[in-house]
Length: 385
Image (tube, rainbow, N blue to C red):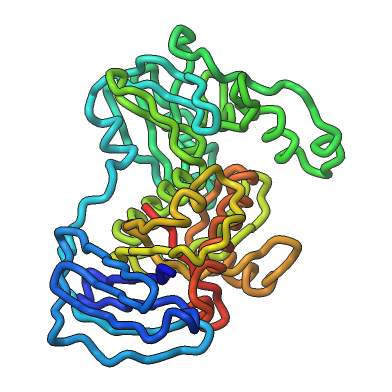
């Protein structure tokens, strides 16, 4: 019976942790052989060979002894030589700044939302709370209110969204603005939520919320709901869980690099806090195999993201995070404390996406060996890129 394993490599620390999942009594004893480019796990029933990526080399002479951890399996500490400058996938800014014609698709169903759009200017927006800061310091009307509205050939990038001018109607085909008032929004004491409901922009085909109309002709699209590709590139659907965790992981990496921010409050467009997240490291390389002992009914809500790897090994760049769920008033005191902490950065996504992210984190946590699931009262998870 093929053994399952998890290999976590830290590029910057030049170290790794190999965990051979709790071995079946019939598969014992195990023989683990280490070479610079591979690992071989041999039992009386099967032999598993793990070939490492070209940029990773193990230093066999510095491998530490094997330790058995009940519930986990066998732990082996490794020293590795790894390329710490691994290039991640192209960012949204890089794609848009290429001055090439792009097509915008609904990530959920693949419907074409904006066709053949070329931007002459792609500019970053100030931090999320810039408008509130301006109002605090100005004794008159906000002088910048109309300046940050993109023109027809502009695209303005926020942390979790981008703004475009939809005045050129020929480019817009697959989105529509919601103009009804729901009972829920009508019952609110304030008008903010009602306004958001009425200004939602949804996909015509699948009715997924793509963004909001922030003013006449200006649309805010959330980066987790849209796939943007050069017009000449063939469109390929990406599994929802794979896309969401990759986009959010890249967002965390960019913010930690540009603003030295490592704590995040994940909020929905409804104003609720869904998750508190602490970015632990961004240099992880994960190699994972569940082996033949994996159950055939692996649960996943998001297409075949987990099922496709249930019987084979996979390799991913990943970020490691600590998180705490905040739905149904869980961890409310800490969420309130983080909300008043200037060192915590708020990231706003559609509420449905926040729930999807929370489920992704929960599934990642549940897939880890028991001893690695918690750290300092937080739960541990990986977001694969």
